[in-house]
Image 1 (tube, rainbow, N blue to C red):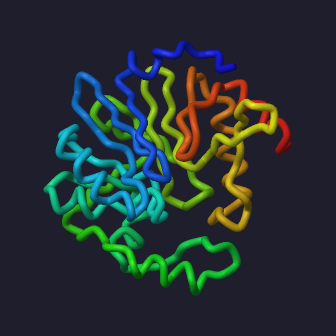
Image 2 (image 1 turned 180 degrees about the vertical axis):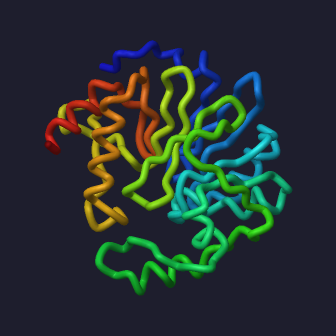
Length: 224
C-alpha cells in the first residue's frame, strides 16, 4: 500500500499519461509544462495531448527515445522544448548514442537515427536550480549524463533515476535501470541514494506508478 493520499497528485496539479514511458502534465499558478514525450509510436496521440493541454513548455528529462520520441511534435507546434545541455546533441541528431539493446551500441545508433529530431533552435537549455513554471530543476545524472527531474511541494519527478516495478507479491517496489542501460552506473547509484535522502512526499518515476520515499530508501539501502 502507498503511504500518500490517493488525491495528492491531483491536488498538486499532476496528471500521468503512459506512452510507453510516463508523460506528466504539470499545472501550477505559473503555468503548464509537459514532462517527456513518450515513444515514437505514440507521437500522434502526443500531438493531440499537446493541443488539448496547451502547455507553455515541454521538458525532456533525457534524450533516450522512449522519453523523447515525440519531442519533434512539440517543436513543430512551436512549443519550447527544454532539456539539459548535455542532452541537446542527441535530441538534435548531432550524436547517436543509445544504450539499448544492451551490448549492441551499433543497433542503438541505428534506432536513434531512425527517430525524427528536434531543431536546435527549438531547444532551450535548463540546468539544476533553475525554475520552470513553478518547478525546480534537479540534476539526476547516471542513467544519462544530463538527466534532470523537477521538484515542487515535496513531489519529485525523477525520470529514470528510479523505476517502479512489480515486487512479486502483488505490490510495487523501487528499482534501478540495469547497469548496461546507464551511462554511468556508479553515478546512477549515487543519484538513487541522494533521492533517498531528499525531503519529499512522493516520487514519480519515468516508468511505472508513483513511489513512496520509504520504497526508494529500501532500494537504496540494498545498494549500499
